[in-house]
Image (cartoon, rainbow, N blue to C red; front, side, top):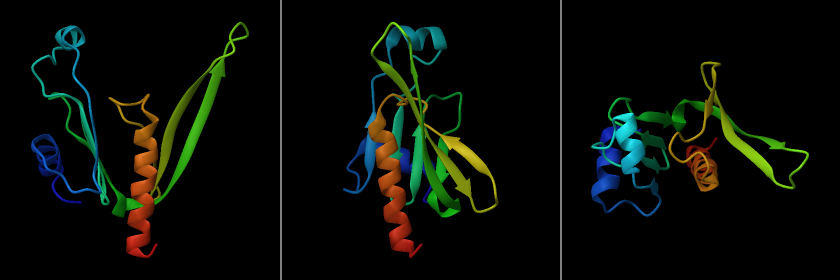
Length: 134
């Protein structure tokens, strides 16, 4: 994968390649104040054909998933409901299987409730595998 900071910089400044998926949202001033992140740039998730890069705040390094390091991806979903409710709360994430035998869990830190991020990740990974002949 190209330099993750360069990917984030290009996504912030634009324009980006048409196959990139960029997710961003405004950092809430009140929550940013209490977390000490109000002066940080807004959260940003970029999914490319080579992987995913997510920036949450200046205290943490960007989270990088390089598709070349993955042997497979599995969608995981759990649901929770209460007896007095007809609604179900879904928790959705991806299990990532690495070539070195590790298994890690991926879900966007800033966009966990946006299922388009999971869908975008799966689609980009499928394109990556098709281009690499895997």
